[in-house]
Image (cartoon, rainbow, N blue to C red; front, side, top):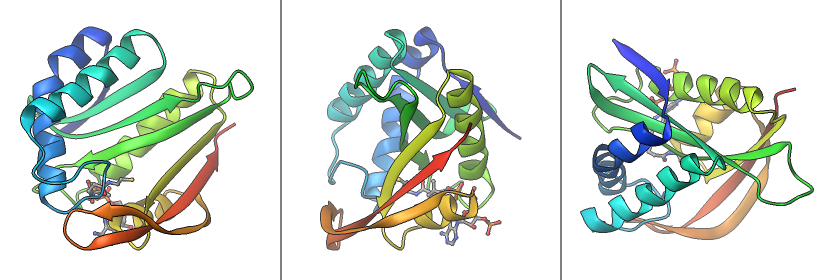
Amino acid sequence: MTTIEILTPAAAAEAVPALAALLIDCVLAGASVSFQPPLERDRAEAFWRKIAGNVADGTAILLAARQDARIVGTVQAQFAASDNQPHRADIAKMLVHSSARRRGIGAALMGAAEVAARGAGKTLLTLDTVTGSAGERLYASAGWTRVGDIPDYALTPYDGLCSTTIFYKQIA
Ligand SMILES: CC(C)(COP(=O)(O)OP(=O)(O)OC[C@H]1O[C@@H](n2cnc3c(N)ncnc32)[C@H](O)[C@@H]1OP(=O)(O)O)[C@@H](O)C(=O)NCCC(=O)NCCS
């Protein structure tokens, strides 16, 4: 059984090694999520320590999907930093372990992230994802609006440059 939880600052700090392992798995499996393989454990853990810091200072909500005690998925809502966008958050680092996909975990994480962001007063969510990816299909199926593509936006782990697709969702 899979449970979705919002991580407290303490839980986020404790989850750093597990989240690092999840990020490494996704990058190795070909996900274009900021990092290129080989992604060293120290670097992955440093990334998640920074996110745990965001949770602690109240600028992000971090969610985890667990099967038994094991973290098999995560997503975060990063609050926009600008004074004039107090209502907006970016959805980032939606990751499901390569061994746990197509079982509804990504959709459950997104649903929980939307509820949590709304609870924090956010009414507009934005994100970008690799054009034609599983992520694009997930967001389209979750009712997000596709804005358009930016060509040659980022490197993928194994296939050179890829286009990114921008989405938004109003959750008021
Ligand atoms: C994108 C990702 C999070 C999806 O997670 P998931 O748990 O497999 O997604 P779900 O099982 O909840 O899928 C929900 C819906 O999304 C769509 N979908 C998800 N993966 C898909 C795929 N590989 N092919 C086609 N449709 C897909 C389907 O509509 C699916 O519903 P269905 O299974 O009833 O057909 C996962 O593939 C992943 O971690 N990829 C690597 C990291 C990444 O690229 N993240 C996105 C960064 S923006």
